[in-house]
Length: 564
Image (tube, rainbow, N blue to C red; front, side, top):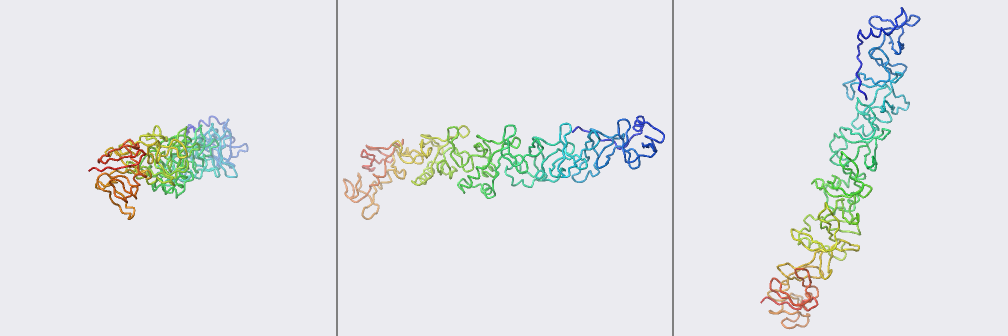
């Protein structure tokens, strides 16, 4: 709005003389100056009152006393006019008039009016009471039934300024402040006060103050955009809540209280897995409050929202996320992206490094994140043996440790560091369980959860149970230089004779052994492995404690020779 200077309330003597110069005076008719003011007499010699009269091209108003009005708002036949300090009707012009109620709550200092070419103020004459809008100098303004320009939040149904703190919730239009009044079109940043839903609103802590500054978008009609998470503006996608506030940061339109509380507790990825996964997939990310554009498809790295993953939110830990094309994030799945596979936990964060997952096809049902659960050789083997059963749908997978440059699933042989020590792993290259760590024999070597089973360097060789994939030292089968076996009759553990101890079939002893000791499990269940993970097939090997193991040429233990 063009700024206007308020018109003076008192007409100076010089101004009156100027008026007199332009008004023709006739005795008893026309314009006459009386007692310092101007009056008008008609042809009958009667003083005119409550009427308009011309002087030149200007019209002047005579009040109920017949005096020419100046600097006044005139109501005439339900229309409003304004006469300036010289008494002339104002046309095609904005005028600010002092508000008699200024200083009271929600009352502006002045009210603005716009007077047309005919002198009438624009006003709302709609019988419906709906908003009255008028374009003036290319901008749109709203006026009430008294001709007062409205400002701030205005509702379509009544067309007047709403001063309530929650006006942004109920109103459709925004007309700037009291000295602006132009209808907002496009983007507008608006200050909000005493926001009632600040503690429950989805986007998170960017908006958790009760006093907020929020972006709104107003259509060409002036009506605010509401309730959309898929609005295209200048080629970018934006979201707006039910009140028209632009959504920023994290948002889930269908989030419910139960799920919110689950995330706010900082629950791990195993808790109520299905509910958490479906909940996370409803989240979208709308960039910063200064930007707000939605990440529709592709990667982005940010701190998760309060309601999405409270623990990482509270720690300030940023995670990689992937928007799937409709703006919603991938969660609880192994997903192919541009020819590579990536895993996303139940709260949508990309998984990197070694991961213990329970899967069904490409769905991740549970994720045991590596928070000390398998970050050393000992803890890894313990976890891997626990899930190494024929019916288990758990397995270990490996995704690049360099999450900022890769993060994709790795297959085949990989070197992985646990607690400062590097180990060889092997992951399936294909099939329904592609990427899962191998259990059992593969290419003549044994693996547990993908980890290559090797003998400790100090032990040189070890015995490996082919069924449980548990490594034991040779000495476990020897007690005081005797081979430990089980009496086939009593079931009690006993010892063979001292000296060389030879395999027995449990019924007939052979040289140097005691009849009746069953050590068949040593030959049927165990193989000998070396520090490279190779299975020793034949010959003899001495371990770090001096025990010699003799093999029969078919990977089976034939003889263990004690240290004496």
